[in-house]
Length: 357
Ligand SMILES: NC(=O)C1=CN([C@@H]2O[C@H](COP(=O)(O)OP(=O)(O)OC[C@H]3O[C@@H](n4cnc5c(N)ncnc54)[C@H](OP(=O)(O)O)[C@@H]3O)[C@@H](O)[C@H]2O)C=CC1
Ligand SMILES: CC(=O)N[C@@H](CCC(=O)OP(=O)(O)O)C(=O)O
Image 1 (cartoon, rainbow, N blue to C red):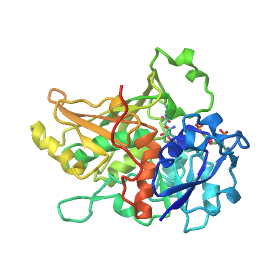
Image 2: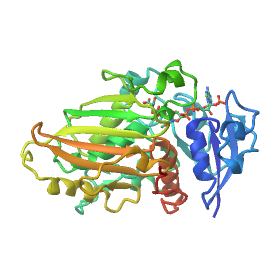
Image 3: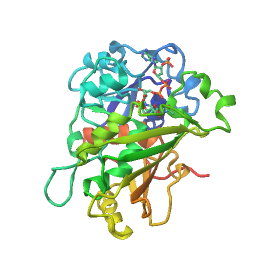
């Protein structure tokens, strides 16, 4: 069975990456493509690398143009998706790549986004561990809540990297969650296509720039929400992203104190928590001991590559996670969740192999 998909925000980075993946998806037919200021122009002007759709004309982003599809992907700026989604029928699968429907706590939304909260949808991170699940020794995963979902909120890209790095140790009770520290090297495409002066090539090339320093980044409540779901009690994370001169990729270094009673755990035993969490996952992998993830290993792939180490002197566990922000961090994660919601194999149309060099 073939499903029709409309993509709103097709001229942007996230919409473009969604189309790059969906163009080769065997069960998907691409329907309406919409944009805002670029409505009326051809997709090829904005996404010249997507040859199969180059001649498609971008329509204005309004409900009329999005109706009549099985799936609607919203790749719009924050705040733009709530109103549109509310006008789409309940039986249409709506996938929001933006932040509007990710947070459960409306106060957290207001604190970090400062606008009215649009609502909460099933969260599109299939590998998210959920404490208090099956009781069979294996934790429940978010995937189970995505089957048949008709609304999906795709995680923030930084959130995906930090959550996948830390959650196995938290769920297993090996890490304390009240003193987490994450520093991320992030690529420029995460900031979208809108012109920003600090992203001009003359500012960006050859320089690393921190931003949202001091606990203000919008992804903080989302990470804390995920880790609470994974089993943490009190969660506090210090989170600092650093823009580095690459177009794609996130390398997240997240550290946590060893939980009381586990200070002397050895690496092999620690690794078991990550191995168990990800052994059956096609897109998340704990690398062999001693091999460190790089962003290049994940470029173009729907993978998260994770490594862990023990810093014995500091009493901390160090996790390093690499993803492609546009693939596992956005469009690939969205297609994986879409597949699950439509009852298709979750890997359909997605690759786990990166692009190198
Ligand atoms: N880039 C990334 O790595 C990630 C992005 N996301 C999220 O995905 C969404 C899209 O991001 P991204 O593609 O990077 O952003 P871009 O700036 O690259 O693209 C934005 C898209 O939205 C359209 N748009 C702009 N303003 C409006 C508006 N007022 N109403 C309707 N449409 C509008 C633009 O159309 P036009 O070009 O015609 O003006 C364009 O198609 C955001 O919510 C972002 O946070 C999530 C995870 C990672
Ligand atoms: C480089 C850069 O600016 N990256 C963005 C990532 C955006 C993202 O993940 O998406 P949402 O905005 O939908 O949460 C940031 O850190 O805010």
